[in-house]
Each structure stands twice: as structure tokens, then as C-alpha cells.
Amino acid sequence: MSQPLRELHDFAVEIAHEAGRATLAYFQSRFEVETKSDATPVTIADRRAEEMLRARIERRFPGHAVLGEEYGTTGPPGASCRWILDPVDGTRSFVHGVPLYATLVGVEVDSEPAVGVAYFAALDEMVDAARGLGARWNGRPCRVSATAALGAATFCYTSVDGFRRAGRGAALERLLAATGTDRGWGDAYAHALVATGRADLAVEPAMNVWDNAPLLPILAEAGGAFTDWAGRARIDGGDAVSTNGALHAAVLALLGEAREG
Image (cartoon, rainbow, N blue to C red; front, side):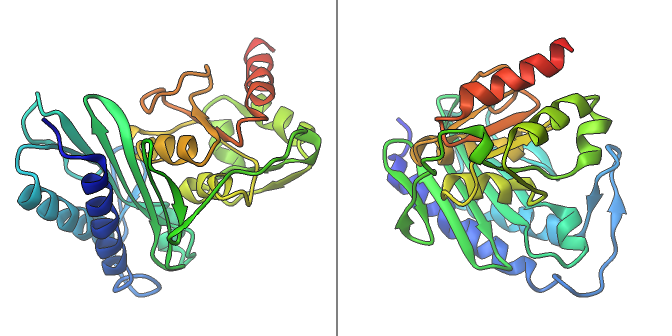
């Protein structure tokens, strides 16, 4: 029998806050930046934060599995609960001293995303949720926007080059043409903006499981929608679409037209 979702949620919030605050010791200071085999950057803050998260989880829930961006998979393969960690989502922002990075903690229960936490330490901003328990922004209930027309929507994404590298430049052009406002407030921050009603959609062409894991429960509990580009509510689809729900079908249709073109 797995732990109650409230217990998992509260512990996820606690450790995300703790590890996120630890990254501030390195933020806007001098540190070495390494490049991993996938051409993404990594710093001491990424590694130390994940080490902290893993140590806390392994002490509290020794029978759970853990998947992290920096240290891979540990724990029993048949565990009913799997913790999914991205210690510094938005490492490029972190490296450049920009505060729009997050510590992400997701929890799967019986292979279903059930808990999500995104803590933006440099902003001291928390967005968290658990299935059936609602979503919160800095401790207050949060909801997606009521925007019903793409022409009035605010669209967020991480980078133009990211779409082009993924061979999806046409999709970006369609979204830019269809939406009212666009901003490069990217990585997890873009999706948190959607969950809290400050933006209406966020689309990314390339995402990992640890990027997506907390976002699905957060968006769902905030009344929105989180899927891959094929419209499947999953965290391993390789890409991501967050919307307020009302715009989801229209956004997916645009992405489908771009693929066909």
C-alpha cells in the first residue's frame, strides 16, 4: 500500500523548498559549467540539489524508486511510488543569473503522475498540486485563465532555436501568428504561468520525463490541460503542451497542421 497523497505532497513540497534554497548558494556567483553528452549544461548546483533530494527521499521512503536528471534511476524496479527529480530546471537561466529556474519534484503512484511541485527559489515562488487535492500557488489555491480565443491568448515558450533544432519551426510560426502575445518565459516557469492564470498556453518541442513529471498534475488540478503534441496526457511523450483547457483543442490542431505541412 502506498502512502496517502497528502503525505507524499507535503514531503515533496518540503524537500523541493529545501533543495531549491540550497541552489541560492551558487546563484549569481562563480562556478564551473560543464557540458553533458546531450549538449546541455550542468553545474555543482544541479548535482548538490539532486543529492539532497535523493538523500531525503531514501531516508523517508526507502522502498520507493527515484529517477533524477543527474544520477539516473535507483531503488526497486517494482516500487509502487517513483520520485522524478529535476534539481535545476532551466540551468541555462541559472548560469546566466536569471531567476526563472526551478527545482522540480514529481511523484508517480502506480505509474500515474500524482504529485507535482515546482519551486522557483530565486523568486521564492512555489506551485504545487496533488491529484484530487487541488493546485496551489504560494499556498493559495490557483486556477488557469478563462481566455477562450487564441487571438487573445498569451503564448510562452523557451526559445526559437529550440523549435528549429527539433525541426518544428513551422509549428512555432503558426502559434506566433495565431496568438495575441508571445513571451520567451520558458522552461517550467512558462507552465507555472499557465497553471496560475498568468499565461494561457506554453508549448515545448523537446521535453524529458523529469521536465514533465510535476507539470501534468499541476495543470490538471489547476483546471487546465497538459499533454504531448499528440494530445496524450503523459509525461514521456517527448514534447509538451500546457493550456487553460479551453484553448487545448485549438492549439493541438495548429500543431497537427504544422506537422502535415
